[in-house]
Image 1: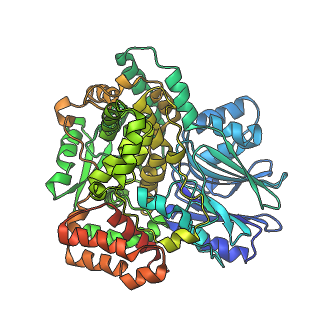
Image 2: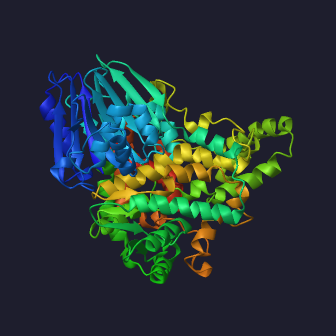
Image 3: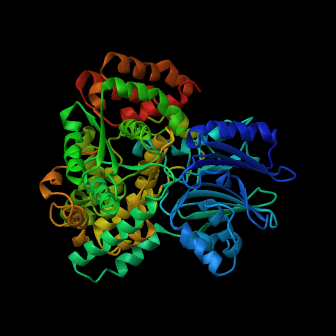
Length: 629
């Protein structure tokens, strides 16, 4: 796990700027720093290293290929690099390797097979910058699901830049890219900024499964797709697994074990997060079954009983025989994290589980350097109750003819009855054209957008079109699979994986996600919905695996989630004072991004009438980034 950065055609001193970019992502790679520049310094690479495989200088980056044609700066892990290495040796593409790193294998594979073919054969998580000296071409690529981040674009319309961390780009001399006001409505709808957008104009997030090629003079680029989640889902759902449910569980267990076996390989200590949910419990169970020694497992608990799963996690760990560590967090612990969030994310991000995720990562890093997680199970195996509720609501709504529903939706939306949040939502849902449209409409919340008309006027337009907005109705044959795919295309990479990457890397912890292994993902999409959900039972096929290792009664309970009691904590004097300073009316007016009247209505409803809306946290996280701008 590392951090990468670089630029082309810099109009500033290249050495001081690449050093500053590297310094800004020290936390992503505290073990070493490297820099490479072409002879004329038109292309410059920076790298920060967190040593995981091949701890020797032989794994240092940026790295040049054996034939000196290619240079790479790479963040991530290629789990099947030994297979690729053996293929290169067997075919005589390489006579011998200088070290044991996956970086060298990746680089020589590109030299032998080209960028696109190498990525297609690689299984892992990564963000890659590769320069072809002969063709004077720079390639940027990102893993299939979006585990590793990569920002790119133009600074002040001139210099092409890229980095793992948005703060590295902001550190460049003369960075003046304005705030992308066109994406603000989407941010306040979701609580995160969806790819391909960032909070700054002309700076983008590379989407999962994509490659960028940009050639000299580095003023325009071409975007290609080497793997598509949408295509994988469509192929799987039109070529369904033909075996029984028991056979599906057996095959899934085999694939997960393969993925976990690969992801447990490291030259440093490895552990796993254990939240007591189905997903993490399955991962830890399989890890322990594959390990000849006790697996290290880590959980955080909360003194608020409604938010605490630590007691159950401890029982699961005891049953499995892991070496278990837990930490109970308090309001004071949360307060200490909040000032760190601004630099941790580099742009507004408001999934409040960012706080416990950071704290469990911090505790875990005290014991291991790599931790496996159970992320991906909800989206791939129909774990969210929202999928079921949306399906149920749509089945009832669809019985009403659309020529009645749609006009009624418009009338109700603008009537006095829709002033309350629940009625406004019902009015919008009534006008949905399908379950996908209903899912989109359910995300909007109440009609209380805090974005100011001034910000909307200065928007260059187009910034509000997200993956959710453009998802075609009925793309997959089964309704709930469409909702799962919508989440895998946007919510999972732009919220869940962003949260895990940024919080873990803030403490130099590498996280790995076996559920997102290519073979597991593609197999999951081939399963019928009945193998995933049966009545009120979610993630059925995962449960079938887990119950082979853990007693059913330990994990059969309502899902708690990884949340914190923000609604309670923000009323405490210290956090309330922090919040009200951020939303000072005069400050909001001077910034021009938010409408002070809407912001303070939301806040006063919360403080005086105990009406909590999640947009309050979205506003505070936005202001943390820009209140002093």
